[in-house]
Length: 221
Image (cartoon, rainbow, N blue to C red; front, side, top):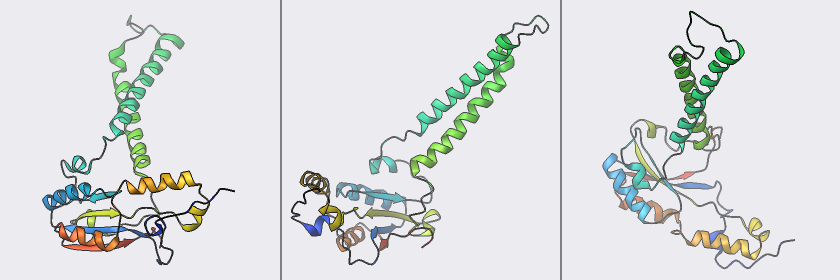
């Protein structure tokens, strides 16, 4: 049985079970790309643990302002494309040169210009399928546990959402050892403390035309 440690700041690290539905975070809506980018800069500088920006179309430079790392997707596409290319080469070389070598009009068995279309097709096929699959995997799709906080955000709204941290319940903390609780506290202490009303006022002060709290809801709730 793990030894429970004394928790010094329960308001900071324990989930409030009195809340009817867990809080997903707070969101602020902005008039356009320019105010959104400025808001993202200040939200990042505030050192919240997690936040994200939502736009109806890609905004150049937004990922740098957010501090996002380079996506691994291009490397997946490159690797899959090379795999498809080599598969086409080995398939055609194996059939034309090794398994069924046939002399056609005195042409060399490995007449590579004739094999270019298959090389191209398998390169595109492998790269395309792997890119789509990796995109779904990296983005965690389909995510049936998280409903969109506003359907119009994909049409004409620009939003910044500050996520509420995932806190442990009192029961979970009781089953944790002192060292685990210390690491948990250290992780939370590294970021700005999330307070719902404070975060709402913060977004409002950044120029948000509308702010609201968002509860955790799935697709079918």
